[in-house]
Structures are given as C-alpha cells and as structure tokens.
Amino acid sequence: MLTPSDKALVPFVSVDHMMQLIHHVGLPAMLRGLSTYIADDFARWEQFDKTPRVASHSAEGVIELMPTSDGETYGFKYVNGHPKNTSEGLQTVTAFGLLADVDTGYPVLLTEMTLLTALRTAATSALVAKALAPRGATTMAMIGNGAQSEFQSLAMMAIAGVTHVRLYDIDAGATAKCAHNLADTGLTVTTCTSPEDAIEGAQILTTCTADKAHATILTDNMVGAGVHINAIGGDCPGKTEIAPGILTRGDIFVEYPPQTRIEGDIQQLPDDHPVTEIWQVLAGQAQGRTSDRQITIFDSVGFAIEDFSALRFVRDQVRNTAFFHPLDLLADPDDPRDLFGMLSRAKG
Ligand code: NAD
Image 1 (tube, rainbow, N blue to C red):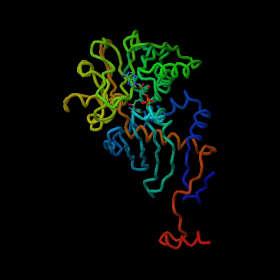
Image 2: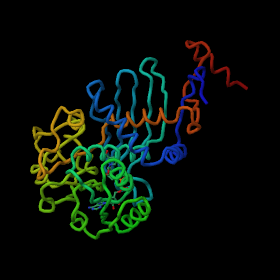
Image 3: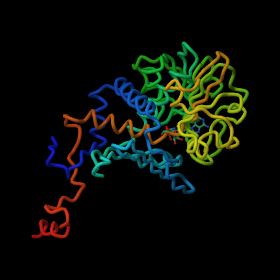
Image 4: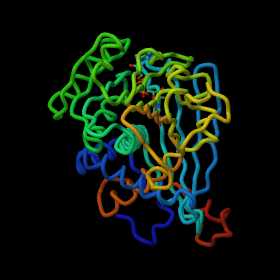
C-alpha cells in the first residue's frame, strides 16, 4: 500500500491488475460505474481543457495522444489504431494512460488502457443509446465482431435495456468468437450472414468495423426511419462506415465537433453540417430524439474526457486494494535541486 511519503512511487495498474479489477467489481457494475463517471464529467464539460487529439498518421494506422484537464487533475491516453494488425496476430487498438496532479505536476496513476478503452467506449455508447435510442429498444445489430464487440453488447444490456444482439462480421470466425463469448451472459444472440440480416428488427445499429478506407457498412437503402445508429469504427481521416445519404437523413450527435469533423463519419459532409454535442443532450441543454421516425446517429470517435473519466474511475477503485504495483517512475533526490547527487545512491 502506498503512503504519503512514497510520493515518488506511482500506482501502476497492469493488464493483470485490470483483469482482476474487472472480475472484482463485476463487468456490468464496472460498465455502469464508468458510465456514471463519464456522465458526471460530461455534465461539467465546460470546465475541461479540450483539444482534438494529437495524431501521427502512417500508411497503416495512427498513433494518438489524447490529453485533457479539469484544472485539478490532468490526464492523457496513448492509443494506436492499426486495422491491418489482426492479420499479423496483433491488436488493432492498444492503449495506456496517465493521471497527474495539476498542483504539483506529479503523476498519480499509470494504467493499461487497452481493456479500459473497450470498457469506456462501450459505456459511452450505451449512455448515449439510453438517451437517443427509440423508447423500448431491445434489439441491437452488432456489425464488426472484433475486440470491442462483446463490451459494446454487454454495455448495451447493462445500461440501455438491450436484450438481443444480432451479430455480423465479414469474418465468420469473428462472429463465432463473439457469439461464444456472449453465451450465458443473459443476452439472446443471433449470428447473421449479411449486414442486411443483422439489422432486421433492430432498433440500435452498431457499426464497429476496422478498415482504413471509406467503407460503406450501412448503405442508404438499408436504414429505415426510427433507428439509432451507434457508429464506432469511423474514427480516423479516410476511415468511415456510414453512407453520406444516411448522415444527411438523420440527426447527428458528436463528442467534440472540432475532432469529429476531422475523424468521424461526418468528415464526408461539409464542415458546416449541423451536429449536436452529446454532452448538451445529457445535460438537458439540447434536444435528443424528438420523434419515433427520427434517425439518430452517434458519430463516435472517442474523446479525451471519456478516458479522463475512466482513469478517475480506476484511481478511485484501486485505492485500498492490491490491484496495482508501486512504480519507481520518478526520481526522488533528497534535496530536490541535487538531482546529480542522487546518482551516488547507485554507486557500487
Ligand atoms: P478489431 O480489428 O478487433 O475488429 C474489427 C472487426 O471488423 C474485425 O473482426 C473485422 O473482420 C471486421 N470488419 C472489417 N470490415 C468489415 C465489414 N466491411 N463488415 C463487417 N465487419 C468488418 O477492431 P476493434 O478493436 O473491435 O475496433 C473496431 C473499430 O472501432 C476500429 O476501427 C477502432 O479504431 C474503432 N474504435 C473506436 C473507438 C471509439 O471511441 N469510437 C474506440 C475503440 C475502437
């Protein structure tokens, strides 16, 4: 356990610790807890420093830094997105992140965020679906059955009232994996062989595919009135999922417009196309769904405040537990101005 005199030791939550924490808290409770922290931070949106994430693009992917601060605490996430990775046995998305005390600038938490990103993305999707999906929505099409898909499905059950998921992926093996992982979770699971089949009877359409291309996962003629689209996979310049015709028929909700206009499905639309910031809907400052026939679209790209909320949640959960290592990350000279003198400790 860390003590106040161990200021130089930073709590580090490893992947193993994160898995233990998830089992300790319980996955549905963790998703609900994360959604509460995200909702709390969205409610004080204006207090945060906000900037589109800092992206370094390459032919095969992107590496991004996602910083924000509420004036008391600073956080950032390092995350990559490489759709070709899975063909080499590597993941599309991996991440880690850090929280720091603004007053001293000292880090207060370093943690894995590959699992945490899947959890926070799913918690955000479900929080938004709860606000925008048609009343009584119980069926979700889950298109793209990779790493995020089980988390998306379980969050929709835990938070947004979904009881039935209809799975589709161009890779039948991914669909079989997802169906296997969702067995015995309480969800009714149907595997489908086409996207048209997957959206049959679904009120929520989640697209969570990975392809560095202007893909059209949902074509204009597939989407009828009254559905909610949770578009997760279009999150990078040149990487989209939704046909422009659907975007112009629907009402679009986004996290942070300056980032989403660069990265989201709305990169296909003119820069002045109207969008609503989702925090305003959750705070009661803007309208969400206003009619049964309206198509609502959450053009999700993932924003730094969601990661900040997730980092806060983990910091609060691991306190007084054994789910972290004290990490020797910061130099701690006896005299703070004698950094050089500290070197003598390692002599001999
Ligand atoms: P993944 O590579 O594990 O899974 C992607 C799946 O999409 C694969 O199974 C692949 O076969 C499938 N796919 C590709 N093209 C398809 C198509 N045309 N139709 C149906 N299925 C198709 O990736 P992941 O970790 O699950 O992430 C999925 C996407 O979500 C990525 O693009 C990632 O960048 C994005 N993402 C967004 C957020 C956010 O906050 N919005 C967060 C995390 C990940």
